[in-house]
Length: 188
Image (tube, rainbow, N blue to C red):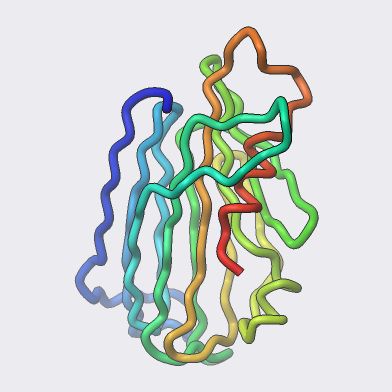
């Protein structure tokens, strides 16, 4: 496995926010996952009590010639029902600029650095709907993405995968190892 990995999970204290009329009394939670290729921050804002956990995960089995150097999962537990009147906003931010790479029920971004590729992914709204969660389509920015959860039952869980590959002489330009691993490691 390549490089330093730091796992930090924090569920912040309840905070009062003024964010639209729908989220006048909201809770916030933040977590970070640090890979050798950079920090991924996840911030959850909404009227549902949430907990966030970050953990290393076992890299999924990939086809011959594909490899990744590390995998983490970020788990967001939703304690109370999410409704249209009380949605939950999830922001994912990375310190590098990246590009959206979607498809196959996956919302994902790849962040290419001089040292390798960092991939961050979540399930798309169609997949979530099939599992009882109503979400808006992801809004992509240059350094991350945002998704609003409109409906979810108490006890629902959202997962985000963080995968990296340190570039070496065997890596090829169109390698999809990180994208595939980010998809395969997500539960469900």
